[in-house]
Length: 107
Ligand code: 2BA
Image (cartoon, rainbow, N blue to C red; front, side, top):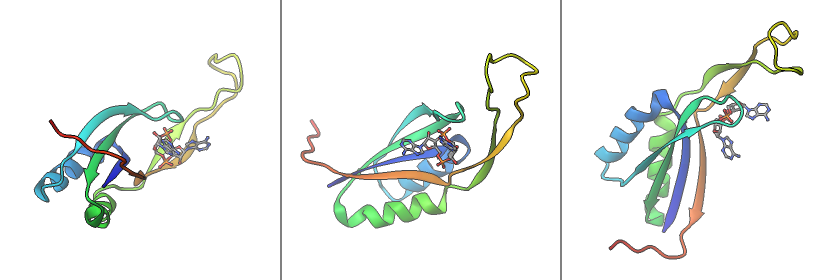
């Protein structure tokens, strides 16, 4: 069994969870925050048998888009007018980790 951890943008979250549920793939969604942009995103926890991992990855791939984001680096002091300006950042589609599950219990 594998645990798939997928960080996706909030805007893709509903579409992705619907697609997973449609395929009878169990999922837990956690509200999360990106450390860099400090914007909300969604972390999916998906526990599946090994033979379904590729199917799940395909669904995630189809339902998560690459988008542009903006972040303003602070040069120091954090005050307005410190000379910092917004920098364009590419976000997503999805950041995915696939972990082996040593043991799974469902009581
Ligand atoms: P954030 O940390 O808010 O990062 C948003 C985007 O900013 C990233 O998109 C990346 O393009 C850029 N970025 C992140 N850290 C950077 C840095 N130190 N310098 C320059 N640019 C940087 P993605 O790579 O698609 O990541 C989207 C979100 O996925 C991240 O949001 C974070 O919540 C999560 N994530 C990405 N890589 C991760 C990792 N190795 N471990 C844990 N979470 C990760």
